[in-house]
Length: 260
Image 1 (cartoon, rainbow, N blue to C red):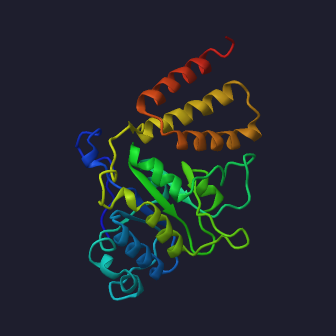
Image 2: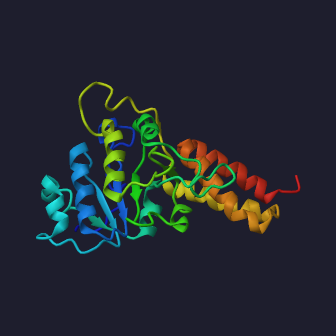
Image 3: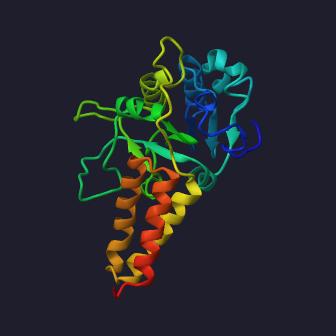
């Protein structure tokens, strides 16, 4: 596996549509090497290249992962990068893929959510380092991890049994997002409409919200839920740098002059 590097190392002009890269695929704490190989194969099927692994199992070139990877054993799998979860959420706009557990707008851990088809419509017009995040085979992503993730994606399935296994979930999601990677018509990469604000700017926005909630004595027991709600709102809004900086200025003034 390769050493971690910043997703923003590319020095190309950010507004150049030709440098737009598909989302990375991140797998958190997979237990089965075979599932990692299956995900790598799905990435190869649908044109995705950047595989990020958080606490992965051992991936023996003679073992199950490479056996399940098909032609992805030649590039996607050996070029995977091992990183920490903190590095993931700090450097990427993260989209957590999870089953919905009957939550509604009163809870913001697994709600609101987009389907993969929704993302396929929206992501082609947004430039930013983005990662699709898949969790463990048995429990998926924990609520603590989802609280750090920018937005949620869920595959529509039968309400009596909505849970897909890890390899299936990744394959279905990447299939729906294939238009981000596979050429075939002139609309595969439409003209860039907006460039998402850098993650460090959005993080400063969250910090400023935290300061404001403290300054106005927002009930302490409600602050964590309020911050999750704001993260979900901004995660779906695709704020530009100008929008984020304008909001930062307004929030800073509100924090410094609450009596007015």
